[in-house]
Length: 233
Image (cartoon, rainbow, N blue to C red):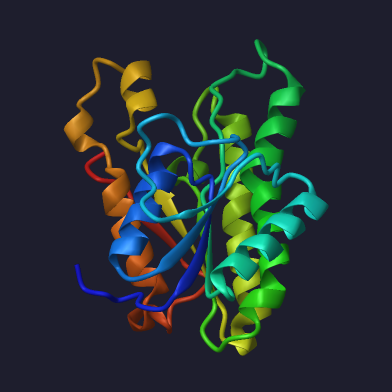
């Protein structure tokens, strides 16, 4: 792999999960140094994060906690060039059979975490001339099916955050973009849908390659975009 990100210092949230770990490995292979932030205390046994700096036990739903974690990660990396907001969760739940608490949960985990982490990253990103923020949205946010209301609403919020923050930061030369995956080929998704055609799903490594491009100098003119990365779903 070409060293497109040589010298770049990147924070990845939700980094202990399947997608986050794949992104961390791919960024390092492209030359970046990476700090991994996650709500879990430690990665699952067997999770390969390479030489990533680990910051576990971080609840990004709280602004003070997010600020402390981003400050510590930037200090460890010697600065910050990019933030990748992967932290998130999914619930399938109908309104009739579910609870409004699920809407609060997914708002906090999927949207508020990205808001808090982005706000905490801005003082660090503004110190260089090519900062990057990349959010993980969802292709499903464009039209919610039954049981998808809370999830789609929170991910639609990620899209609007991406657009608004891109406008806010464009004169600071900080780009803000979102990736909209379909079903991601991860062990939990395979376990939940054992009869699905897994080869149609997008793989974490494919999403990671798009992230590398968006972090590179080749993508300097792209901001405010929401890019579908859907495999063959």
